[in-house]
Length: 310
Length: 310
Image (cartoon, rainbow over all chains, first blue to last red; front, side, top):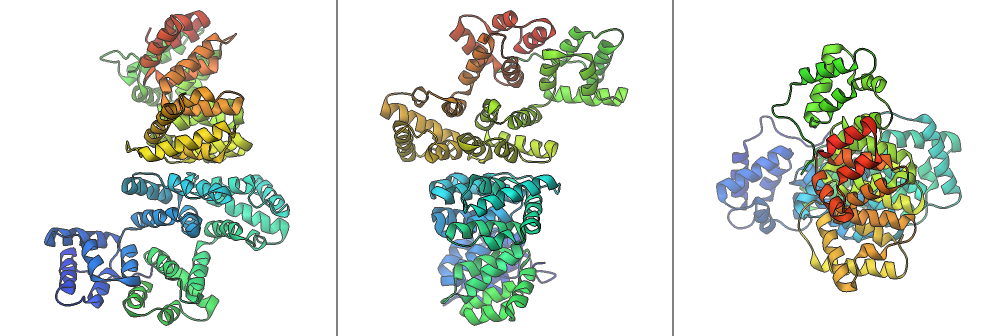
């Protein structure tokens, strides 16, 4: 349920490359033309356009874009243009180097991706940065955050649907005990979240709610580390609701959190942004299009609205 | 530099299956025939033999072997018959369920395997046990051992040859400081060992030796946790020397450590046992064949000697 709209039949990669070249020529850039091409092509098509452009004009499309566009628009285009796995590797690298400041990006990549996707991101990370995601996260964090984030990005989880209900019940109790004792950094919480499969964890969270009368998320509130735990649980349990909240917070923040806004739209337009949009509309009594249009401007606004499917 | 010897041309899988069937028929089992087939076929051939046997006789070769042979011989054949990745997954599962008792097996699989091999073992683990290696190791260990073992098995390390010499020097100092403070369970020691690439770690260990005048291994001696740290370092730094020591300890132990002896021979016969044998000979002034012949007996002895290339 993507929001990305691609015309059928789509122009060929060569036609698109020619249109972009034309948009770059002369005084200034024809941003509308850039948006009309790039915001309406899927990952494979974007890759083909880059190859065709390089082939035709012997210059790197990314480098050319860098000198043609700027600001939030440029940042958004540079996030968007890569394929999803490559993009996650780049986002992970930027976030890892910032330590805990951008922990949410690390949590999202670790907890929303399937084990196979996370593995592909880590392989792209090796190829691009000549090091591992794990070592970068580990060397830029300390203490409880390191324990949590490194464990989340490291594990190659089982991806099957099998559930052990006894285990779910016993681990719900372990989580509850740690929470009652306010031992939120407890090794057992991190062990359970970081090693159990998504299906098993969802069973455990359901057991928690049944046995202790409240969603585990509701009882975790306090400092930033608790926010990280909560983010991990929400990314595992209900990623689309989680991303709706990221969008809501980004749009409601004075000055708008452009990084958060761009990240969610760009990483979900080709995937599940339609669902996130519906949740947003219900939750906020205003459409996402309307809110984005209100809080952004210029080419950045036009680009985001195109990706949202406006 | 394997010790496994395979005849050329080798019999077909069907011929081998027929020979095995014949060895099982009548009163008792012709163990010599079993050894002459299984101890002289590579992983692909062994797989073909299992398929051919199943096809010809509508029975599982493994099940039949279970009722035909016994004791240490049976255990060794059951370790040997699988292909290397499948075997490591099985060894890891047996070890993980024993918690720290068998920590060496976990350390070996995590630290000797290349990142791609470890990943393949974890994928085989998922397929066979419907869970992850990480969750099994984590749920059967606690404390410092859990921190170390889970970190070692989890990370998908970078496998390139690039080295950052400044980083090697600064992390050698971090290791040295932790060792001076006797903070062996220090998060930084575990972080460095579990996340840095093999090439980077070897550079760091070399820096350590240059700057502090002693091999990092020599300064780590004490309790069982320190042994685990030392095992990890030796598996990264000089796996063949490490395995020579496992063999030496297994053979010198009163009663012989059959599990250790079988494990090293079976997992290295098709890989690098020739090198380990040479190191053993130099170190002990006796050949590995001689030592194995002295400490074992019967079909078990004949099987191991065949794998060693005797």
